Image 1 (tube, rainbow, N blue to C red):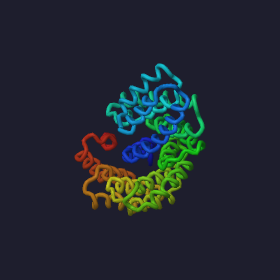
Image 2 (cartoon, rainbow, N blue to C red):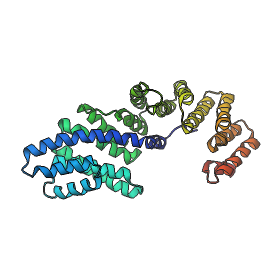
Image 3 (cartoon, helix red, strand yellow):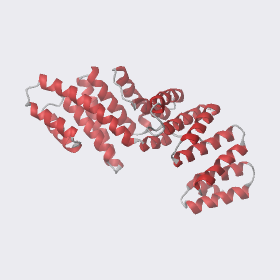
Image 4 (cartoon, rainbow, N blue to C red):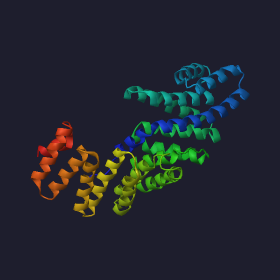
Length: 317
């Protein structure tokens, strides 16, 4: 039975995207300030052009920044400041899109602009560029996990620091099936979060992510410890459900069938009917040879969610 997937990590990240945007804004502001000093000192363009762009950025006018930087790049196509700013604006616009095609277009433009910026200048200013570039590649999905890792690691090598880099690295390492590195990165991300108090950060999400990586490594005792902590401390019932379902699967792997059943039943007791818990109960019963009970659970799943594909497939057997 498959216990985790790269897609689940991507969903995990999406839950915290508002927090990550705020981190990005702070990082981008540093890059803009550095770029502004550099450009004003070396170019003869009126200072107000760059000051206006910086003010637009500060005001959150990303579309205007995107368009104006593009216009200016027609005259100076290798301007580090303009390329960086266009890339940063494209990244923000990508996050704001609902349509996947539009999001991909802005993400691709972000990547194009920032890679050109790195050809112009590396050093300290390049650290912020690498940081956003790594996150842009993350948005393109698991197939780009290696590039996410490459640029986030380059950002660290250039002494750039942002509190969300370990979490992104943990997600990307997991997508690249480098689970030991994923555990290490998530553990690093967990330290400052845990130190801020129970209500101040996604500690439960990180515990869940660490456990998934341990599951992929086949280290079920370690996974069990993190999942138990997650289920016991989280205040988000959807996270608790995920943790208990994974606990059930881990217990099955360890041969504790009764313990696994109790995890699924506890979800139903604490939160009412849950399609995932019902489905897992059905799988467990089927593996015990109790096919009538198994099919009854899968029929309950379809009453809760008529489109639940795994249950449909099981009942069709």
